[in-house]
Length: 322
Image 1 (cartoon, rainbow, N blue to C red):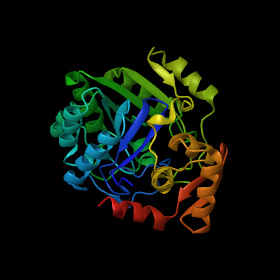
Image 2: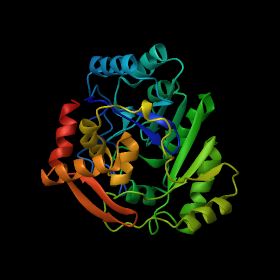
Image 3: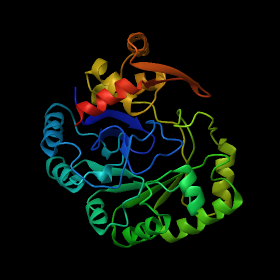
Image 4: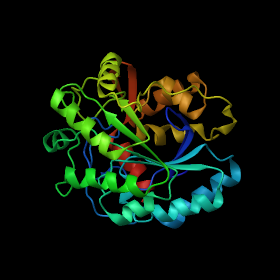
């Protein structure tokens, strides 16, 4: 079982995507109310080698020797990838070993005001920052950042990155009713989006259980109305994940990958079967066993029953990655 790689999974945005997780669960600069990975246990903006570089590159080497390259190597996981001071080294390693594959970094943009972080991110093919608020009050209420993160430097950093980055910027905005859908918040977001000049703006909402339990997703009609009112021409309402095609691209260690997948993000049984390329009956069997062992719990959501790792199991996954 890999400790720092997960998937590949069929992504709504990236096709077949192999995740690269460069920070332990749950080291992040934000503690977002909607985060599907649970509460942040170490809120920090300190860059460090949170996982061994040699171990990450060894897993990548092994994966490439035994599997075809994914469409994308995607830097994401249970925390903020730009916190890892070896981000640029891993991007360079992938570029050398798998030049035909593309790389994407999913980031909350909290460190993008740092010129060194911008320089490392510039080696990716696609950078996918999030921006949920363009007013300080809503930013702090919804994303709950480290006290050292301020909104204006973040916005300025995104603009500076756009000025020098030759790749694609796909910026995600998560809309949460009661948090950032007030007219003044939406107007401020539009103004910021015009400055940032992202290639694509992906309008999204809650899809899995968040950190706070009383959150409601925005109806698709609301997202489509916001996109129309912004009138920017590059806003896309995000839909469901695509169904997988040829299962030969999936890892064969489905049993071992079940808990690793759930520890990073809650899944329904159908999600898990699709993500890991295993039969639905097999996914249900493994979920029952993990629930009986106390490693996962079931949470009722509008879209169905989601399974998420218990705190003990999530910590275990994080310790494996240190």
